[in-house]
Image (tube, rainbow, N blue to C red; front, top):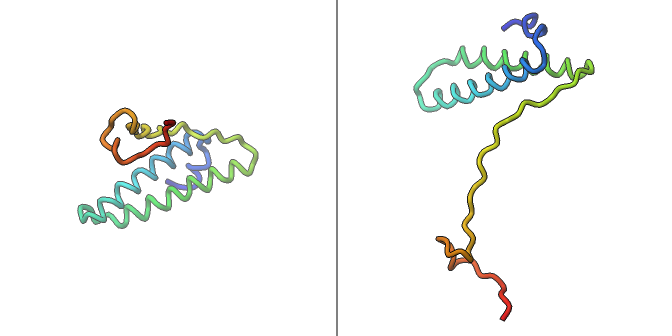
Length: 99
């Protein structure tokens, strides 16, 4: 993706593409680590494209445009079993109880 094309996009689209490229980089890095892919050139191009996107976002931010962060899906909270409910770790935790 060339710099001129990146400059013409709006902030929401820039953020979305930067997030997509970050996910692609993660997958590609993981595949390269596992020896499944030899896409070093693709990895370098993707890194440079992401840098262009982030640079354009920063330029828009400095120019005074409001940048609204994209809604990121939050991971589900871990479920903790309380010791008082007889969970798996009930015997490991002691609480101060009134006598």
